[in-house]
Amino acid sequence: MHVIIIEDEKPAARRLSRLLREIGVEVSTMLHSVAEAVDWFQNHPHPDLIFLDIQLSDGLSFEIFDLIDIQSSIVFTTAYDEYALQAFKLNSIDYLLKPIDEEELKVAVKKYQKLKPGAPSITLDFEDIKKLLVNPVEREFKKRFTVRVGPHIKILNTDEIECFYSENKGTYAATDEGRNYLLDATLEQLETELQPAVFFRVSRKFYVNINHIKDIVAYSNSRLKIKLNRYDEQEIIVSRERVKDFKLWLE
Image (cartoon, rainbow, N blue to C red):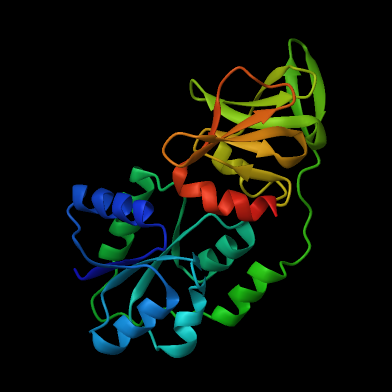
C-alpha cells in the first residue's frame, strides 16, 4: 500500500506516521503545504491512500484538487466542525478528528483495505464542502441538557456550562456555579450537538466554552493551558496537535 501524509504540523505528521507504522502501514512521503503537494503530484505516481489535513500553512488543502486530478482514496484529518464532517460522511469519506485516536485510525485503515480492487473511486464535490466550511448552513444546536440529581431532573442551559469532560468512563458538565453533573452522553456524541463557535474540543478529555475562559497561558511542549472562571479540579491542556486550530477558533 502506497501511503502519504499531507499535514503542515510536522510533529502531528510524525505522530501519525508512527501510529500507522505500529499497525503495519508504512508512509512513504510527508508533505506540508499546498504548493509542496501540487509539485509532488506533478512528478510522482499517485498513492493508494492520502491522510489529508484540511488547513495547511498556505491555504485549504482543497486547493490541491483545483489543480490536480487526484486518483487516490482520502482520509481527512481535521479539527473542523461537524458541517464538513457530515459532508465527508455523506460522500463515504473517512475522517479523523485531531488529536488522532489510535483505534479510530485502525478502523479507517481497515475500511480502506476492505475496498474491492478496481472499485470506482468516490467523487467529491470539493466546492460544496468548501462552502460548508466557510458558510455553514444554519442549524439548531442543543440549548440545554437534563441531568438527574437524586430523584429530581435538573435543566442545565449550555451557556452556564464552562466545560464538558470525561472521567472514569463518564461524561460530566461543569457549570459556572462550581457544580459537576453526570450526563447520559459521550464527548463524541456531543460533537454534533454543541455550537462550534462556542465549544471547542481541546483534547480527548475536554470541551471548553469560550465564554468561560479566564486565561490562556503557554505550557510545556508547545501546548497551552486554559483557566476557566470556576472549574479548577483538573488542568485543561490544549494538545499540541490542536493548538493551531484552537487559536483559529478563538479568532
